Image (cartoon, rainbow, N blue to C red):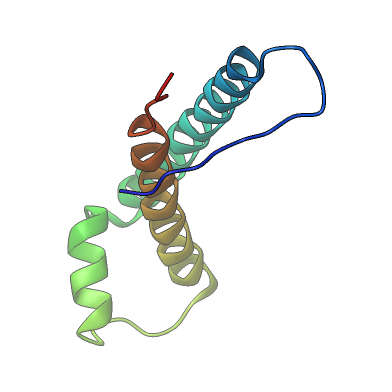
Length: 96
C-alpha cells in the first residue's frame, strides 16, 4: 500500500478538488478503453480473429510484419495500460 500526503498553501479544502480530478481522469481513461476496444473490434472483424488469438499466433511468428499488425499490437498494449491505470485509480481511498 502506498500512502500520499498533500499539503496546500491555500485554505480551500483539497479533498474535493483531488476527488474531482481523479474522477475526471477515470472518465477519460474509460473513454480511452472504449475507443481502443472499438479499434480492436475492427481488427478482429477484418482478420476474423480474436485479439487474444492474434497475439498468441503473432508471438509464435505465424504472421509477417505489417502496419496493421503493428497497430493491432499497439492498441492491445494500450488497452492493457489503460486498464491498469483504471485499476490503480479505482483503488485509491481517502484517509480523512
